[in-house]
Amino acid sequence: MAENKNDDGKSYNPFVMDSIPKFTGDDVTYSSAKWVQDLDDNAEIFGWNQQQKLIIARRCLSGTAELWLRTEKPLKTFDELKAALIKEFPETVNSKKMHEMMSRRKKLPNETYYQYMLVMKDLGKRAKFPHYVSIQYIIDGIHDYESNKIMFYGVTTYPVLREKLNLYESCKEKTKDAKLRDKSVRPRTQEPEVKSVVKRCYKCGEQGHVASSCSRGIKCFKCNEFGHIGKECKMAAISHNRGACGGRSDVKFKRPDRRSMFVHYACDGDSCQCQCQHRIMLNVNNHGSVINKSVKCVRINEFIVNGLIDTGSDLNLIKFELFTKLNCEYQPDKILLTGLGSCQVFSVGKFDTDLVIDHHKYRINFYIVPTNTIPYDVILGQSFLVNTITVIDKGSVEVRPQSYDESYQHSICLSSSLTDNNPCVQDIINNYKPHKIKEAPIKLKIVLKDDIPVTQRPRRLAIAEEKVVNQQIGE
Image (cartoon, rainbow, N blue to C red):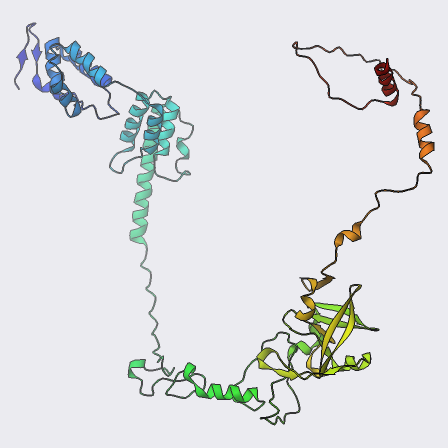
């Protein structure tokens, strides 16, 4: 290896400068002051003079720093280069950016824990952070469960942290080897048996073949016949029409278990002679279902009966049995009433009467229907409810007239014309003389902190004090 000698006779190895890192000016972790300090330390060790330091410094500049040197005037001494370099690339430390940088910096997979600690230590040293702050960032940058990193908490010095990192690294290696051994020794799990899939035809619904090989064609699952599907089935429509006229049908229809004011099956007297004697009634005729329904006690003439508040009914209905007890005249009016399932019934007539609900009297028009057609004596529909205020809450019903005002119930008399005791009360007030009974032995001295005037809000005076004030005002 070739060696050069300077004027002082000291040997100089040109390859020694390779030990000095390149300075680019772009690396925020390696400042210009740090680079100059490294260069001075190496020059002191190897005995470089100022000219050699200048040559090595110029050769160690790269990137942005090298481009900057080309644009500057020639710097003939190392001190001039050093001063210009530090001025151009000052060591400005932004604490916020350094905190963000250290919080984002995590341990890389290709570096050891000791290398990671040294990198973070250098960042913390440059930012002038306390050791415990940098150590906390080092611990947070390790990807692992907090329960596994519990051994690091409480460490405040780097030597102790290095010992903990060595112990932690050895534990991780042992855990990794144990997992590999368990994986190699673990018996192979038996693969679940694949159950045979039963073939089923989606056209006819039978098993053993698929739709592409079905010879019977599509099947209707309403009438169980082939050649059409359910929505095109004519037998279902015919059976439905027969059921509407009271005839028998092979297709069974289930009625919804909900209340209705009309419960008979529809019968057209002109076109269909219905021979059935037993009419099918809905579950609403069961008096046990009155619970949780909108039922009110109403009074018609001298009779108190249960009335159903039905917001889905257009008319007010009353049983023929109850109408006969009222001894009222009615006007014959045969109209067709329709309920759930297209059930139909004809009214007998209609009449007007007075009805009392919650101590309020109403004039109402009723339609008379056969006794067995509705489960309640009275059904109040929309023709009555539109003229009232009705509140229904969890089965309880409150009915009030539209002109009803609740403030009348809570009116209070705030004035009275009784003034017999006024002279006596006035004499007591005028003849009152306060007597001093006790004297408080405590006296306090008010010490003011400043010269700002102390003001007190006006208050009501006693009767004796008020007389004194009035006397002073009069004088």
